[in-house]
Image (cartoon, rainbow, N blue to C red; front, side):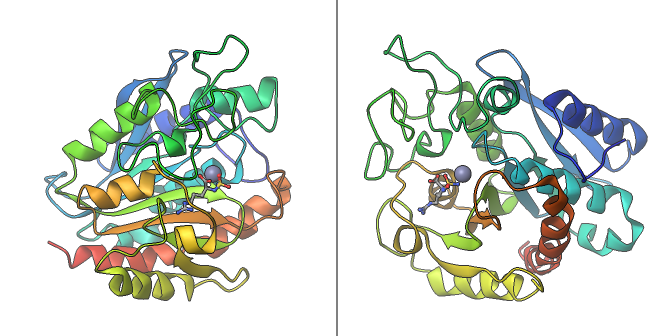
Length: 296
Ligand code: 0X9
Ligand code: ZN
């Protein structure tokens, strides 16, 4: 039904989500949270083995916010596969619900397959006739418009005309806000760089519980055998990125909020790397699940 030896088109990925929901109806629910600018559905997969889902603490994982970072949706579907179809992982479902959105920017993703492999942004029309798309990771409504984002519609880091101008970021943020009591950990998958990034990204400043966030990230990354990650403040390790999704998640009270830059040396990671990267990453989720399970 799905494999991790090649990169897949959107239809294949959405087909796999439907397959999981149809095949494991007790465990998996496919939630349609809205539509993209070009009218593609936006899907979140909920995994819960609780008799009353939506009542226990939850982990959120999104991927594919940047269109060209193909390894990120591939890792997300690998995670889905492991959580749902691999019985040895049932421990990760104990007292924890999972919300996984493998493709946050489906229009951009398809565009990278059809027209321009290195497209990053959404595909919405802008005030410039020549330039399309908003950097969805500059479009979230916390410290929107600040350093590390551009007001130029032709720029690669264009923040949009206003916060949540994009249907993709609006639908995602509305859904997360609805579940914000339940969601204890926010994880957003990007590539590339082998770093775990902590808020804040809008400036080199640190939340008051930064050390606690960092120690959990250190525990999680200590599980990695093949690829070693750096852990640090987003703005300090990388660069400022106002309006990024992890800052926003932190700002609404999701205490543990991380941006992951998966390993690669560019955006064109060969498909033969999907499995090694995914397999190496997955054990970090045991650390996160164990923590989240204690956060009633
Ligand atoms: O620029 C971004 O949105 C992310 N990097 S990427 O190469 N995947 O585009 C990094 C965002 C990280 N946020 C912070 N710098 N805090
Ligand atoms: Zn990215």
